[in-house]
Amino acid sequence: MEIMRIVITGPVGAGKSTFIRTISEIEPVDTDRKATDETAAFKERTTVAMDFGRLQFGPNVALHLYGTPGQERFDFMWDILIRKAHAFILLVSSHRPQDFRAARRILAFMRHRTKIPMLVGLSHADNPNAWPAEEIAIALGYLSPHGRPPMLPVNALDRSSVAAAMMALIQAYASAQSSQSNHRALTT
Image (cartoon, rainbow, N blue to C red):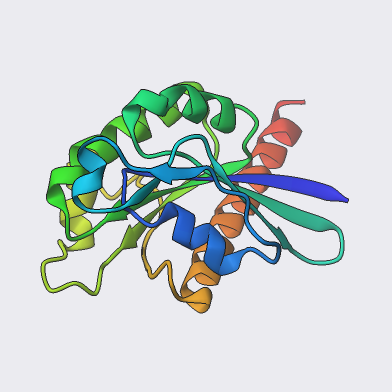
């Protein structure tokens, strides 16, 4: 059985824990605790170490889903979780531009440690105050569409939406693997 490790990351309140709860076929493991910092202003509980879920993907592949805490003070967990990941999703709340800077810091942190496939999931994209994907891409530092990761709306409460995001990420991973194989074949 092959195991593919997927990290779900993003700022506080982007929907990471909900994303994992929605798609996991096992009862997710979480480390939610009562929020005691500025997070308490908009949510009662928050992840302090990680979330874990599992999803069988075909007969021979299991996806292990790891959700990071959103607060920067837990960045040691970001480091632990991303180091062995095969791919990751950065969830960004489309309607909270005040979180875009934190999302950009998380993205830089992850990209500094690994060059694995990723996508940007735009949560709360149905909110009337949601920013357009193009403007969020620019806020994340992707000024040109070239080299930009896939970006798609994700409703963390909707299983089909979460599944679509997972499929897009797996396609990005497969494409990256194929490109690496082709590159190795050309250089040998």
